[in-house]
Length: 475
Image (cartoon, rainbow, N blue to C red; front, side):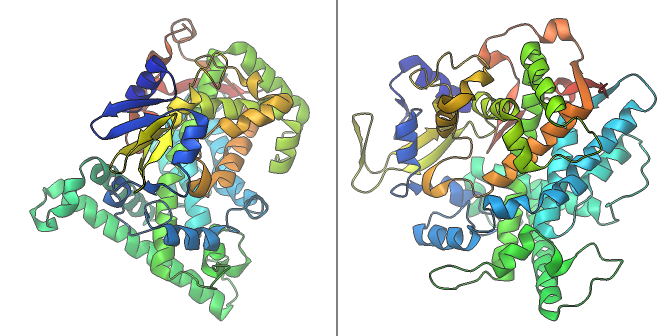
């Protein structure tokens, strides 16, 4: 539906359009921010896919949202997230570089599927930070490609945990799109859907046990054994921070079950959003050679020594154009480009000069905001320069890929750090090229450039076909 909303908003202009009985969409920045504000309640759709319990993403309760954001605020603040970058490298970016090196081998170049590479990387990064150890998704990818590696984070249970994770994500999508499933007794559901529920239950059991194990480790202050992957209270990660998190007003903490729900939804929300943005960014660079050469030059001049890991704060300071490329990618190909629904308040609301009564669902279209002709010059053109300089800093406020207001994504700083560090590293150390440059570089209308699918988030409909590129070592 995301393309339909975007097309309707662009066709009629004005930033607001009726898209169905009792439904309107907004795609103008001030109206979007008002819609996402604290006075609007999330629509019932969010309850429909709350298959792992109430959490910061699925809750419709304002007081619950306030309490949880108070508890989790410090966990995801930039200074806290920056302390986790060593794990982002160890369990994510370093593994990607190892994969690229293995694919290239002693050849001049190799073929890599960007989608699977960065999806597995993001899964391992989030699982490492939120569950205490990487699930071994990258190792599974090495195995699938028949590549030998010496050190693995993979264990015999990794494939099971990955199955739990994928099943849970599929169930979230299914219940969001077919909410009546939640009303049917489980024993009466088709076998395939019952299996998804079983996988979701298994993931929650695993997540709750993981939290309980870490809490016990912290409470007992036991020295960490050499065999353990979990460094307990000494580890700078999300799991530790959530266990000690408190509501600043009441001092309330979270139970093991509540933390399990939060880290599970983080795993679902923080993987494909980050990985698809990285993939889109590389693809857009390859389709805009001048931009690609400019960003490569910037990265390689700023961080010439490949032996040194790039630090996040230094990257943000020394790579302004690459950061602008990331913002333009989030604007141009937002993985959250769908319409995020809110219920009009009891007293109604005025948007764009129109009175919207109670009972109407208002869809905040991220894609509509990002393609609004009143906000952006030539919005259907990929142009990172729009985010350079003082005016560029102001324009970054109009990128709402992480939403806005009271419900803004709490993990936005983590996602930005992961994207910036991953892109800076691979753009410095490797060269990329299109498989079929003459065909793929043809300029197509915006809505025909990428074969997309949008469930909860927007991604690639055919990644096996559309996400392969040549990679070679940079010289």
